[in-house]
Length: 111
View 1: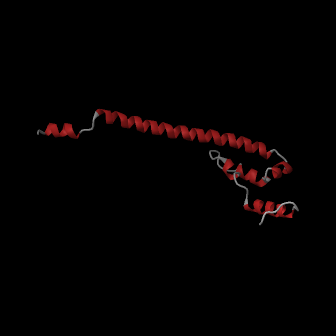
View 2: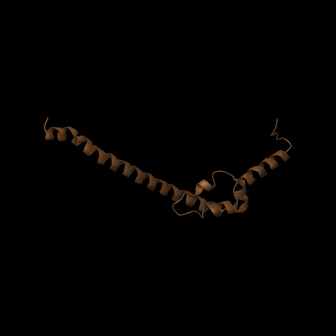
View 3: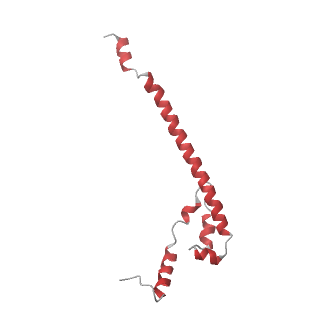
């Protein structure tokens, strides 16, 4: 076997060379589109939370939010999604709601 035979046998096939850059480009494009989509979603959520900030205290309390939670969510970075801060109620809110429910005569939370 000659030296050129070894080199030919060890060289990658042209299909593999052309497929790898295409896969890398597809992965890069997919990541870029995901980031653009996340940014658009974050902007949409920021607008919705800004509308919540215009509500009065009673409306916010009805949906389980406080003014400070809404304003705090709007203080995150411009590129971040502020809605993740409002997904779960604060522990103090949950404790307060359980105590309020236990005071109602027709609610039985235990046993």
